[in-house]
Length: 473
Image (tube, rainbow, N blue to C red; front, side, top):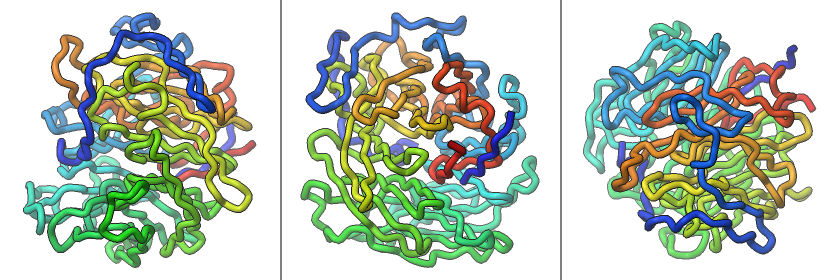
């Protein structure tokens, strides 16, 4: 959730669908009919900083907070981000980190909280912090271990962060099929917030039986979060247990809400959906769209500032495969732009994919991003795993184009099998881009470009990127 101010484990990463083959030699990619020109190229021609990080001339890495003890093990992967005031909250498969970013060039770790649970998707609201757990644990506490696949606990954990140096664990809530991601939704009044719990399956066991075509809605009384409870389990799809048909789904991967507009966009594995959330506890599907030609796993969504469009991403290969290559092409593992029509329907426009081919060892696909608050334009910063951080202008929805990037290069330059690494999430907050790199930690990136400069004076008090708010036009 944001408020704008104008001023001067391997199991959770999870749904691995394919391990793609080797890349071809880079060459110009074809322009698809009705799609977006995506020129080929290699990152080897890009400018590089002293530490070898490749970047466009208008973007540069200014600071990094590395993964250090206790988050320095093989399974301590960085995940999503949230922001509040002078602090960044960095999810990790082993817990979360609070970082002081009052001076973005000199970030400081305030505390690291060990609380294992894949994938620890994170959000903040006032004095509360929420973590998603999408793997069975043998209990709901931060000292829990691996649990029974059928009977283990998984769901949402709630913390009090009024003291940033000593977050306090308040309670947990079990949710069906766990919580792969969650979205914070402010209530119609300030006394409550809601969480839309996205999870997919089904799996064996009483808590995740087929069909799983729903989300869980958690209501949290702000002044008494210990009374948080699941208040509804709305069924969004009615395709039953047969998930073999095009567009069939088994739950949502991620949901982005635009509370001011009473709208939500869901990336729901087999399709994209638009929802009415005027009744926060009972979201209703307005339309479903499928793309059997180009989309594989609908992963996330971002509205334009005026909510006239939505950008969906496709996590082809479950994020594990090297799909940013000539063989895969510009329309798979990409972003797709949809108009929201006057009668609240979705109409597809163009596609976007980063124009730099990656090596056969680099997992690369479209992942989490957010708008850069530029009046009158739709500019998205986005993580692409080992494809790095990309900034693209979607203002012309038929021809989006990249305007800036930072690419750390392959985590394993000497070859071998692709392994999970790179930018999980990249978001713009108060003048800088913050990227949660799964193995390198928190990257802070400066961008200086005439297209993005109007965003520099904009300040936010709080940002959960999946909870969009309008900024001044």
